[in-house]
Image 1 (cartoon, rainbow, N blue to C red):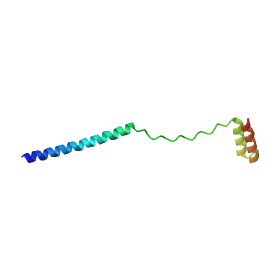
Image 2: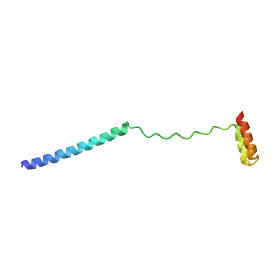
Image 3: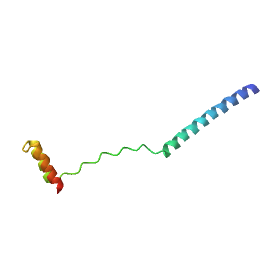
Image 4: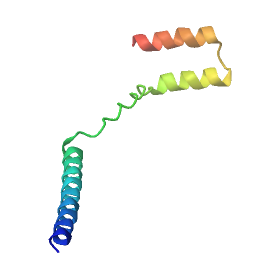
Length: 82
């Protein structure tokens, strides 16, 4: 009878030890998740500067084929000076 009680005691103690280790592991992972920083998303690309009405009109005229590339580039430089 004493062997049977000893065997039951060993099984119970091993079961409790297993659940103790499992619980400590889970708590450790939860604490780690809570106190680690989430990955930082990269900064989005900055938006291009807005075009004023004259620059926008110049681009539209070039796109429609009303002015040549050379004329477009020269007028673009002229507009950027002001």
